[in-house]
Image (tube, rainbow, N blue to C red; front, side, top):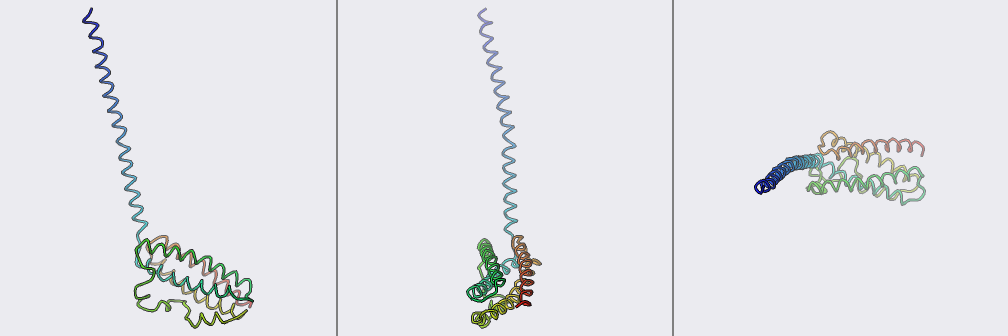
Length: 209
């Protein structure tokens, strides 16, 4: 009677140990996929990040050239906005140009900083003065705009801005054709579309002055 009583707890203990081992094995197996999935996600994120950072010399040149180009367009807009006797449609256009191109300058500058590139080409665009870029006004032309008044100033502003926009479109088309950084290519296409619309508007306004 005594021997039987001692054997029962021993059997129970053996069963409990077996159940515990099975439970531990199951937990280890279920944990393994979590680690693998986490590693896979990390690799995917890294690959996506690397792809987003890819850019070319065309992207860099586009950003470096478009910054001063936009800065001059804003300067021209501020000159006309400071004058009296400017038709309301022309004033509204100048405000639109200023509002659109300021944030684009900030975006272009931010990309160059991300890429570790200077905000302007070393030695100037192609080794020449930046003022030789397509559509850029000379100091004399800026002075003429500053001195003009009323309708004459409005007409001069639009004639100068049409040429200025055409230069920007040419630069943007080069980025669309040869750029590698998708956000920069998308911005270039936006510049083409927006500034062509503004050119059309200015040509219409010139016929009414």
